Image (cartoon, rainbow, N blue to C red):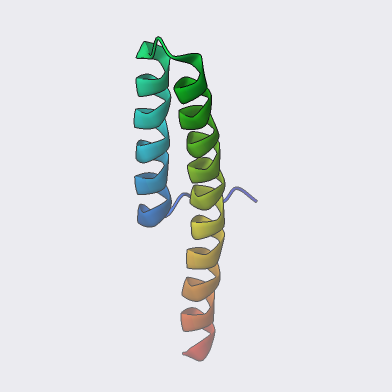
Amino acid sequence: MKLQISYRGREYLKTAQTLLLTAKTMTDQAIAAQLKALADDYERRAQSASIDDAAKALARFDER
């Protein structure tokens, strides 16, 4: 079963992509590494948010 990305998850992914693009333009490697780590965190948040949102949607469906 494939999990669809929720709206909240997509927003986290967009932020992660922006952070990665910014990291690529950095000349300071320490800052670039921090931005990449932050982007990784946002990717994890996107996955977690999508799973949480799917569970909430399923719970609402089960209430019917």
